[in-house]
Amino acid sequence: MSTLPSGRHIAPSYAIFAAIFLSLGLSLYAATAPAGATTIGSRRELFVDDALIERLHGKAELRLHPPVPREVVIVHDAPWEGAGSGYHSLFQDGNLYRMYYKAWQRTPGPGVPNTDKNPLLCCYAESDDGIHWRKPELGLFAFNGSKANNIVMASGPLGGLEVDAGHPAVFKDENPAAAADARYKAFFRSDKPKGLLAFKSPDGIHWAPLAHAPVITDGAFDSQNLAFWDTERGEYRAYWRYFAKNGEYRHDERNPVGLRSIRTATSKDFIHWENQANLKFVDSPFEQLYTNQVKPYHRAPHLFIGFPMRYTDRGWSDSMRALPNLAHREWRAGITERLGTAVTDALFMASRDGVTFKRWNEALLRPGIERDGTWTYGQLCVAWQVVETKSALEGAPNELSIYADEHYWSGASGSTVRRYTLRLDGFVSVQAPMSGGELVTKPVRFTGRQLRLNFSTSAAGSVRVELQDEAGRPLLGFSLEDCPPLFGDSVERPVSWRSGTDVGALAGQAVRLRIVLQDADVYAYQFKE
Image (cartoon, rainbow, N blue to C red; front, side):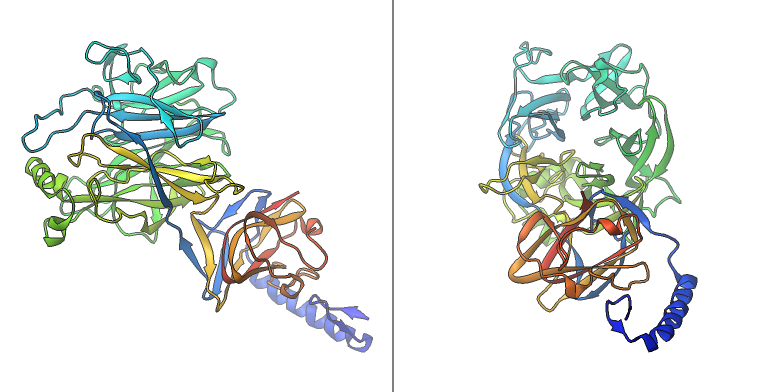
């Protein structure tokens, strides 16, 4: 007996005809085959873009998932802080979570003295769990005659530089060649001369210039400007505020100087930057992005993810006057109209090359139900960037924590930071209702012996996976009929077929994944040993 790729047997007398048919089919396919398969090895792939998606069928779609709001974790209520505090950098450093932020006692309002002349400071907080934060007394800089504060950098002259400490972006340098006294690095802004200053620190607390002149000078920089070590590509990458000039983007009539946009560059030493480029967006409208908050996703570092704050000036209307804090909004508009009529929210975007991003045009974080401190200019500036924290549900896996501003210059005594949570990899899923749908990937080449999914179903829902050859034909033993339905809610579950979970025999081959869903979400997949 002979066997077709489907696994069905045919009589010997028909074997020769089947062979001719298959040969003809293969030759026809070869003329129209894709250029090649993408090598993914054992890396985790998320559905944050369509780079590896061939097609969606039925009711399947890619769905953006808003994080769940949790508690306020920081209140900027110290005498050197206030409603102008923001631009948070946040990362996990071993068992410690570190946070750096702009501290600004900017609390003017109707009948209140203007405090814009107060110094811009960079402050430090830390946590053992990412939820409960403390502001240690560092004793480094005096404020109103006392060093009993958490200030790690103050604006002013330093070594021939004029440092603006109010736009900090701090990170731990994972470059194995980084010097011991530069294990932590940061960008601070300089007004004179204009540009970004490179700073270094051995401990994240004591800072010194890494260079005695701005290292990037082409930009506006009036935002949080950042850089990091890209472990996948072995280079530093920077992102900063840039006003796109005529011909680069369509101008906004309210902003004749250009649109608030984002520029990027790479470097081998954090000092000399090259390959400057404006970010490009796939299928996105011309919108003003106040921040970028880009960083490699730690569970899939070949993917850059960002949480830009979208800036929208809605002008005066009945809806604008119905929003919270009207008196303070009108007062701010009396200084500059946009300070009273602009509102902000948070978006999500992802990239594989650091320049071209898939940006989801729907908000990841909306301003939310109207209440004090919301629907303001500066609300939902997301901290740079996500970290893993323990779930509040006993026995549940870790989750992602995202932090964003509230009460920014809204008349409150100090701005606050609220924590939001998502499941691991939970930014976007391929989702289908009970009526069903499916996704087919482009050809990929993997290493490993198991296919594992991050997925969720209802009690009646299911997920099944078929492995296909490059032409889209089911592979023997890995067809849909061979895959018992998966149901449950797991961040990492092996897929099994009637023969078991071992797919090692297919490693290195070009294969497609056909994922069939009913009332289910799949967030990520990964081939592992």
